Image 1 (tube, rainbow, N blue to C red):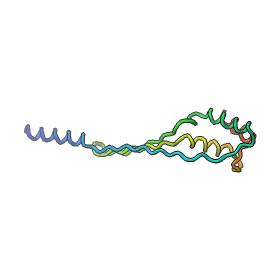
Image 2 (cartoon, rainbow, N blue to C red):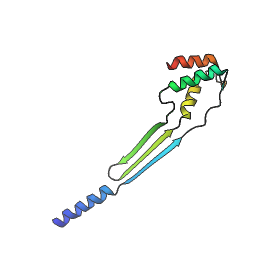
Image 3 (cartoon, rainbow, N blue to C red):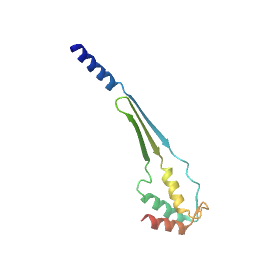
Length: 114
């Protein structure tokens, strides 16, 4: 009886400490979109507004976890770089898609963020 109990305890110890655990972090940062500004005021207003958006300068994270208790655990974390926020702001601002932000477009973008 003691031998069977000891064997079961050893088996539980091996199984609980012998799990497979992997963790992966993937960084995805895209290149900045090429953009021009109509004048200095448009550029200044765009960048001032972009700096007011929460999290625009920080990296964004997304985590995925797959687990089979006691046996297997895999975690993938995807980190999106700060260029993503810049590109999204350009997409919101450049409404006519001519790759040139006018002062009017920058004012509209600024009004939307407030």
